Length: 116
Image 1: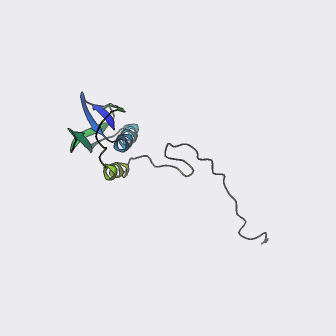
Image 2: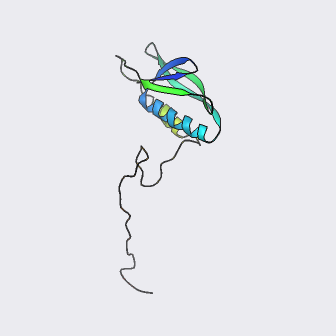
Image 3: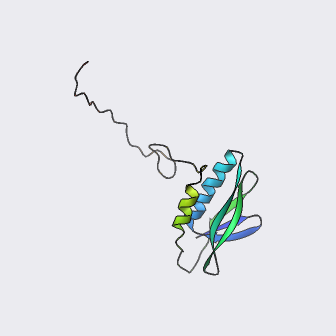
């Protein structure tokens, strides 16, 4: 679980949602834009939502949160955040962290050596 600090308030959400939120917020800010997002949160062990404005001038702080309860399944919500048009897309040959995955390029001779 992660604790998200925003506008003097703190909310708790899943790691997956928090990671998607940080990536999207940075991407929106880098475009000089802002956007309203609805974030799934946990209050007293129950699912709820919080509305945030992310982008330029809206600071987020995300850190760990220890919980004795089972983490809720917010995977659909995290996927919806990742579908935002400004969410950064991975390039070919990059892993989830944006690092090269080391797959060498492969040049296949489909003409089997035939010359034109």
